[in-house]
Image (cartoon, rainbow, N blue to C red; front, side, top):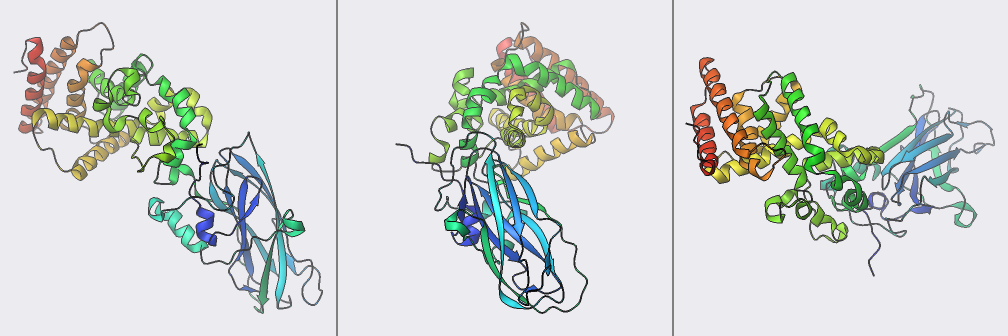
Length: 450
């Protein structure tokens, strides 16, 4: 029997395990600051953690004390007594409901407020966090902003008691001390999302959440028959807009390089094999329950970008190819650049830099394309065009023979190199590397670039 999934328990980390289970959400209640002063603003903080694999609407209703310790009515007030929060699957965050009291409110250590939570799943839910406590959390796998939020929230005192035999609102006892007369701060109500699955550095829960969608929709569409032409058009457009219009053979090789990265996601189905696909293979991560993987996998950047879109709106999966070509293109280009460097080093034996240096170069390439500034012969050919040369034969996409494309790009490279030399931008080492790789690749077709 497969164990029930148990996603990271961010709420339990903050509350030392305490929680109220309210339908498919888990909750805990606090006030901030911990010491509430008469005449000063304070915040009612409601931690909410979605324990389901579907989106949930949480309707939150605040009830402040009706009178103070001297039985004066209207001593406590809030402009926001009802809040509707939309939570993504497995999301964790907190709702803020500002409140205040009159300067004349009587001090007491026995005030009580209540918050009612009505959690409504937007589709049939499946539980992904245990009612008694979720899975472990590694804070180092969270973005710095989320780490800071969690550390700040850990400084509060939480209540998880519910009235009416555990079925009513959450109740919190708090004290109020004298505060004197001062200007009341304007605090804003709302929802603060601390962590969604896409924010967590461990990809196993994310893959578990979207496993079926990946296998039945997204990955099935990553075939060259659907991918190549849209990617080719995007390559042409983006490089032209960046001031480096490509020749047709150059654009074709770059588009092939991008396409093969995506086809590697299903290596057996696309005929590339697991050895070639390496870390770009996604199906092997999904064949079993991703939560059972011994180590957290590192996902390709294109997949991270695609899942980020899906996490916002699952309907994006119905337009996978368009989303990748338009919205995830930069992430895919980064993956392709890294892979191309690996291919070039393996083929030429030339040390092109440390992993950190290669990654920085790939990021700079993506930035240059995005900012439409800084692209040149050197940066485009190394690594993108040369990477395309090395996978050209693996990616037939038309009736044109691979040798014809290789001959054409050899002519393009010679022209580019001559223009770069005339402009004083020549890189002799790069030209030698280009010629060497084209020569090596062209030997089987009986031609040389030089």
